[in-house]
Length: 132
Image 1 (cartoon, rainbow, N blue to C red):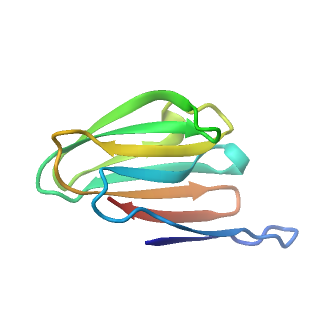
Image 2: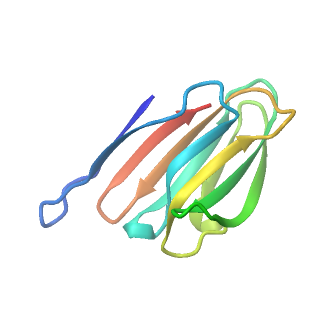
């Protein structure tokens, strides 16, 4: 899957865009390349959706851009066909954080997750989905 991002033009005519590859099906972890809590003017939110017929347990861990761990690992138990909404400001992210995250399906859980990430700033909005 390829992710395409496009930001609207600002008052001075600048805009931003980006394209990057996302993981393919069959992985037990999902890498989220852009997570922010006010960093560079963006704040992100994500939805972890269980598209399986049984419950799935997973963890979410944030990382600073230098690869060091940010905050504590968050664990979610998501029932079949349900979802978990996570806003970055509600976790262990300090103001002006900009980094990455990894969602890992816990051992013993079988099934599939889809993650949708939204990022918003004063003038732009983008979203992308990542299957595992």
